[in-house]
Image (tube, rainbow, N blue to C red; front, side, top):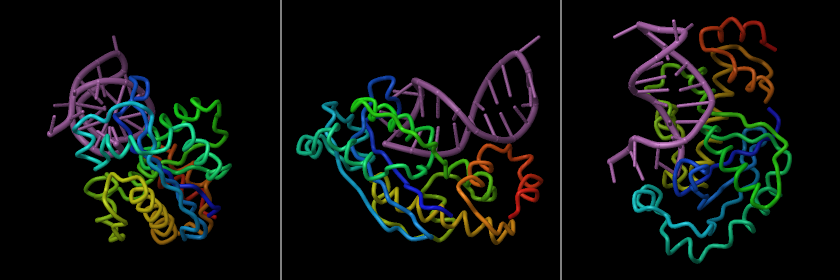
Amino acid sequence: MEAVAVIDFETTGLSPARGDRATEIAAVILERGKVVGRYQSLMNAGVPIPPFIESLTGISNRMIQDAPPVAEVMREVAGFVGDYPIVAHNAAFDSKFWDAELAGVQRTRTQDFVCSLLLSRRILPDAPSHKLGRLVEFAGLPVAGRYHRALADAEMAASLLVYLEEELRRRHKARDVTVELLRRIQRTPKSQLAKCLAAWKG
DNA sequence: TGCCAGGCCCTCTTTAGGGCCTT
């Protein structure tokens, strides 16, 4: 598979449209099944973190006070990610924050997201849950650090993507797993997937 | 302790409702 950037945001809540902001981002570059580059930073958007989120992520308001401004971090991480296809676990969430925070520095993304949640629902239908942590456990992947911290979650999502790629080869006999194949899989209804995979086998 | 938002996906569906996921 071509090189991709796997990203993960920690935020103050679920919705940038309701005023929630990013508090941390990580991006790892995945190339030939290996992580070859890492970026991680807390960021200060000037919005308080609710107590529930502090306890969920371990990222406190005090930590954010000492962090660099959100604009500085977003310019850096956008440069780091460049034009690589972006992968995230539940990309609908991360893409909302990616777009909203990039807009704050007058930038727009040019690439589409690939979603490891949608892929795992299709490729690992027998997993008891498709939460990132439960998938890591199900697949026997290494726990990269504390869940709900951006770098650990990005590293585990990257491991999961490699595992999904291997499963496509093992279970579905796919020879050439490309980002385009992953995009096709994630937009194919589950009921039609087996038939489509047979037709797409490279 | 996530109700919030929103997209996906299943079903007791499609003129809808509710669970799953992300923080």
